[in-house]
Amino acid sequence: MVFRDIHDLDLTHIFECGQCFRWMPDGSGAYTGAAGSFAARVFAEGDTLTVEATGGDEAFWRNYFDLDTDYGEIKNRLIESEPRIRKAAEYGYGIRILNQDPFETIISFIISQNNNIPRIRKNIESLCDKYGEPIEGSSRKAFPSPEALAQADEADLAAMKLGYRGPYIIAAAKRYMEEGCPSCRDELLSYLGIGPKVANCIMLFGLRDMAAFPVDTWVKHIMNDMYGFDEGDTKGMQRFAAERFGSLAGYAQQYLFYYYRDKKL
DNA sequence: TGCCAGGTGATCG
DNA sequence: CGATCACATGGC
Image 1 (cartoon, chains in turn yellow, green, orange):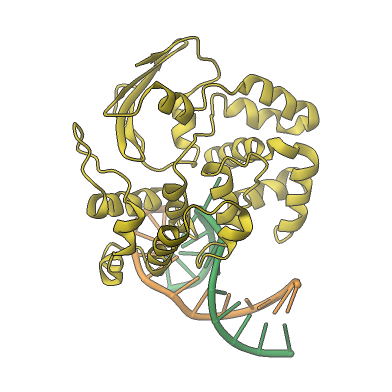
Image 2 (tube, chains in turn green, orange, purple; image 1 turned 90 degrees about the horizontal axis):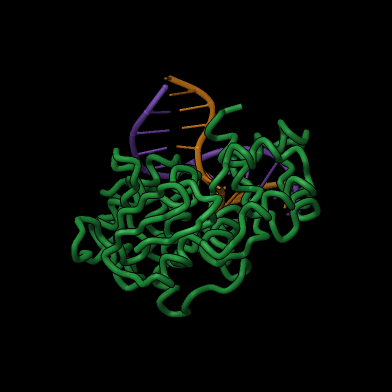
């Protein structure tokens, strides 16, 4: 399917900015990957976005890529309220916060803790290969269901190099099965293996709370470098983000994170 | 080798 | 409360 008249979209920035882990360039300028239980190949030319998907209707992909949000407007408002973010916002041109499946987001960001992005990708792909359903028309597997991960064996997860996160994954899947999708930050924080940072990532990327401002090791560096915060002062950083960026803090965080991680300033 | 990566849980004062 | 430490793993 083809979406026309799309602005402020850059697939590289969308897929490499650290919000998702299952998309990769195929060498032709396109990206292949999976969202939930669908696989796809996507590419952008001019102001059109083409999605060749194994499933999901137009509404699904329009929502996944957040095509109804005006990112030009968001960027202007961020720069207006905090001019020092301009460079980061311009560098991350075309980033869109994807609307990802909540369960996939929960498990993915539990895996992300004290880990690096290439290894997070490998861990998630291993999990999908072993516990995900096959996707018709693709070699990729769907992200595993809560039921599948709830029945996973701890030793198998250990063999897949998930480290100490294995038990967190199984416990989270069981709980999700029994209680359904968590709806707020406090509920997420009561999961074993989910602390303030991971909870904020899930709120932002999985539950669409655009005011969430995850503070990870990169954001600590940024906030120290750009604004002079002590690297231990997470509370102060959160307060600053809430005051300056308000309901747009999540977008700001993503621009800052991507800019710093990519340029290593 | 020791430090780091999209941190958190347990423990201790 | 806040500070400290262990925790699996792999890259540099």
